[in-house]
Structure formats: C-alpha cells, structure tokens
Length: 236
Image (cartoon, rainbow, N blue to C red; front, side, top):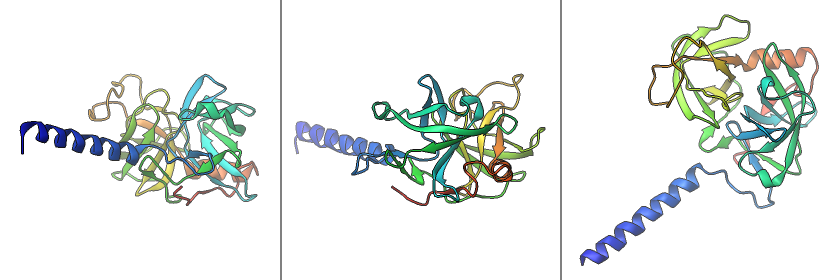
C-alpha cells in the first residue's frame, strides 16, 4: 500500500468516525418534521432568553407538558427550540412558582416530538431526592454533560446541593441519578466560590438543584397544568 493510499484510508476513517459521533449526539430528525424535545434541550423564551428544558411528558389530562426554571419566563411566555429556531413557537408557559423556581410549559403536540433520550442523556422516570454521596448528572445547553457528588439538602425548602457544572443558560437543566429525574438546575450555591469554567475542573461552586418531587407536589397541590406529570418513555 502506498503512502497516498494510507492517507486516503486514514482520512476516510476519520470522516466516518466524525459522522458517527455527530449522529450519536445530534437530536434525531422525525419523519413528520416535528421538533424532537427532551430533557437537556436548549430553549429560547420570548425570543431572547436561553434556558434548558428539564423534562417533557404528559400530565393527567394528556397534555404535552415540560418544565424549566421560572426565572426564564412566566405564564404567557412563548417557547422555541434553540436547535430548530425556524420552527417558531412550539410551546407556551402556563404556570409557575418563583419560590420553587419552576415554570410549566404546554407544548404543541402537532409541532413537538417528545423523547426520553436527548443527545445521549436519558430520563427514565422520576426518582427520590438524592442523599449525601450519590452521584448526580445533568445536561445543560451551556456547559453540557457533567456529574458530581450530592452534598445533601440545601438551605431553602425544596433544594438540593450537587457538585455539577452550571452557567447561565443551564437554568432548568435536568439533574438525574441512575437516569431517574430528581431535579432541575436553579443556580450557583455561592458567589464567593469559583464558578464552573469547564466541567473537567471540579474545583468550583456546587449547584443548587430544585427537587422535582417538591415541584410536582406543588403543581398537584394547586391543581395546575402538569398535575400527574410522567416523563415520556418515547425514545424518538
């Protein structure tokens, strides 16, 4: 085999590896043109605020429901996909709670395909609040995938402290333990500690996570849209 042939084969192998990598992390396009949305997807609220979708599924009325942080927007705010901005508005915020920092999104099922595995991040149901030492993972539109130890309950009711990476735009990002949804990213634990620059450097402030169980309990107690929420099991 000549040197030129080796170069061509190496280039072809590299290209195939790149294609496989992209296919593994990119959202799967649906045959009917719907926007694939799952926990960890980037969303744009009212055209200018970037946040992360916590999870998507159905409530006890069958409505297609998602969650994110309340500080991303309130009732009436319009939601679009960051990956597919040309598809326009795909959902509307219909409820929220500033104290627990959650917002409920009602998605248009004619435009959205709910998926349980978004870019390799799987949400397989709801789990209990994590305890000290359990490893939690998150997927945010800004800092991507990261995992870290759980330190325990936070100072405020309904909060948990996890050593995961977070930056602006990660608000609402799903936090899981063993693929079970346990919460959403709220913000930094302390402004006096270094912020997370890259996920590979663990010396940064922990993140404050809002408990999904506290959120769903509040939703059900007030009989809001999202009552009886179950994350989708559809893999897309």
